[in-house]
Length: 213
Image (cartoon, rainbow, N blue to C red):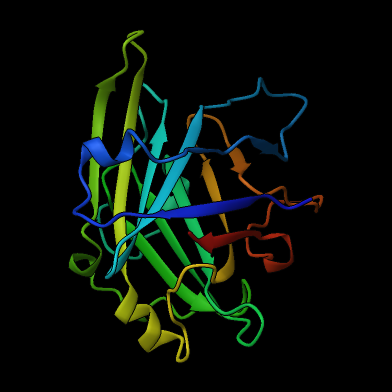
């Protein structure tokens, strides 16, 4: 069964204190692992909340030395240490979805379309719009090293891209979260399970459900 995440509303501004009270969603479905290679399973979770003007997303990934090779917009950051949010705002009437992909430096790849072969990667790519913040070399109370990636998606921008979209309490939509990378060991991890034999995140039938709380 696909998972469900209720997105809590926040009346004020979003800061570190806010995230202490937002429910994390673990990204734990390890996919397409090779029997001949020792599994690489970085612990990763994500949190969402929303305000009157934006949807806010924060990833936490326990990797000591995340790989960062790309620094240009829409470069293939999925080959680096990468976190991704695929978002389908109007699944009942519009099959298109957005793919937000980031490496640990905050470099972004953004696409829009209905499937893997129908992606517009030149669309809407203004990184400043999304307030991207990447932090590396952080340590928890146990001394474990992690990195974070946070960004915001303006609700008025979503409504421009998806006419008819409106963020109101109870509104449900679809999407998935991923952690992936080709180095140091190729790995693929998802929040909602993906039931196909070969690597492919661009499969909206396997998306989970979100709802504005």
